[in-house]
Image (tube, rainbow, N blue to C red; front, side, top):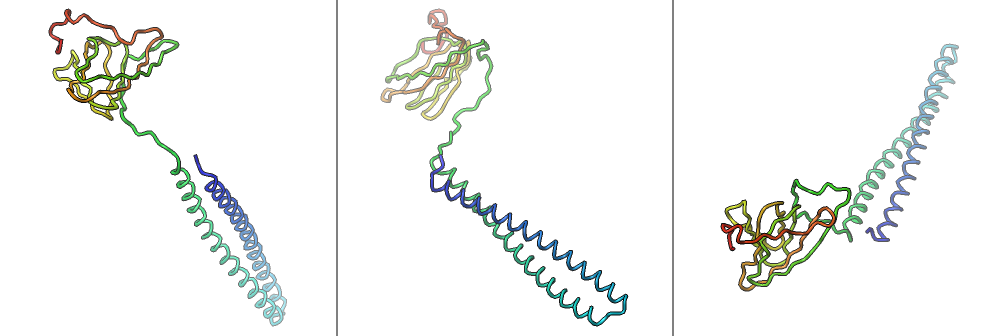
Length: 225
């Protein structure tokens, strides 16, 4: 969340930017009025010249032109300054917002992004989050899953022997893996020294068992059995 000082500074900067934008609008109005005044002087000068009154009108017109020109220059200069200030304020507000967003905000780091099939389609699903601790040499039952199972390794290495793969899958600490549905498997901690700790995420139809155990004798070719 944004800190209070940053919120205050951001609010002040935005309020000042609004005032600057209003001032620019006022200056734009003044510039338009000044240009209109110059046009009126032009028309008046031509009318006076047409009536044969050159000298007084010329002097008066020159003075008025000088006044209008000076006003235009001043207004244009002020508008440029206000435009520069507006740009700087926008940059400042953007920097404040980015800094405020960066402070105290934790963003998730992707570990696994995978599209899978076989997810439950019932009106309601059951979500289970479990942990498991394997001492050196421990293993799971020989089993299958009815829905995909996602494991995340906290510590150690998890070795999965899958019936549909020739080589075992080794998942290390900080890694994740999706166990497929309907595939016979056994999970191991092959280490002789280190403990294996993992988190299990399982989404299924309600009242569905987490796994279906299989009699190892019915699958003699399975590794490790």
